[in-house]
Length: 264
Image (cartoon, rainbow, N blue to C red):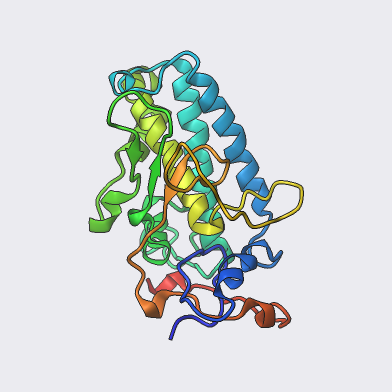
């Protein structure tokens, strides 16, 4: 038996059953599921175009991973700001009310202006971020697949996020670590984070339809923005999976649950 209601901003695997094909995606476009989801996907799509424009000057290739420049630095900053915005949205739209544990503010609410990576890592438990893989379709070499949150499987650190923080506070001395590799990994991290909320839904205008697929030069599944390929987690336990008939649930006033991140 799986979960009988979806959580806010949390896409996960569905138990196969009656109407599961429709139910597995239709809840994502319900306006109660997420606050202004297009605000987040539009920012990503703009970044994606800028990253692709960068490829006109720096070939996506193993040999260029340590390249750095002001343009790469700018894109790394923008990308990680969006990563933080998405984490905050997930925590804010569910249940998360941390308090300062020490110091002059001990006992006071610790608002999202003070949330950091130790807060964001909680999302890994509910979204299985460490199991996502993003892949670049065009790449010279072998380094075209990225699992940007893989280190969180063992509570490790994220080198690309550390690079963002270090070069943000000391660009002159840390300029070299705002490199192509960290930008690419951060960009995949944002892509994964959005996919863990919205599957492949980009919230662009126009009609929604299901594609039956067909022959393609590229194997695999393209995600939001139709450029990067996405591999979704396959390690969901049955008790973690969704199991509901959205055609019935969508008629109810109370059709979503909130994750209590305070207890995770």
